[in-house]
Image (cartoon, rainbow, N blue to C red):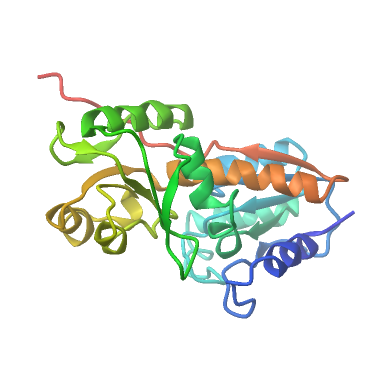
Length: 267
């Protein structure tokens, strides 16, 4: 049976864009040499997700984002204070191993974060891709009002647990070149310069005046979703891919991290 170290080595050995010495894709908890027979895959290692994975009999949890609320390894700031103490105690008591797969999977071709997000939205005709990384891409769609395309996005992300999207731009403006990115590394000025007219961003990487309003003034419409929403399709694909690479292990996808919900004005 494989262990977390072997799965990590597989991901990094197939990710030439990642520096093994500098990556955040490291073991966050547990014995990395422990043989595993059942593995959970998730976007965020929320406490509810960790408990669910343990209850399902998983010895290893592979997550995309940090376990202890800090991007840089080894994530020490919150481990010795709540809610980190509760999380660390549970991991110690259960022996569950946690591996982060972030830098490797972000730019994985075809089934990584960017391309999975685009495919989930039904964007198939790619007309531009960033040359220095697999982070940004522009797709061609039939020309349509922004409100129509935004409604399509909203209908799709509802399947992922997000009940709406926020839009910046004239609702009747015609758009035909949407651009997507990789989580917080959302499409920006580079894609606007080469013809993107509507950008799909996530809140974590697109504050109002520093990013969204600036891109609006640069000529783009902006549709914003939650960070996890844009990356969950890629994590589902990671689960399936690892199951194909390690057939002796059962891989299970969990998506029960907390998802924000919207209260609309009644007036």
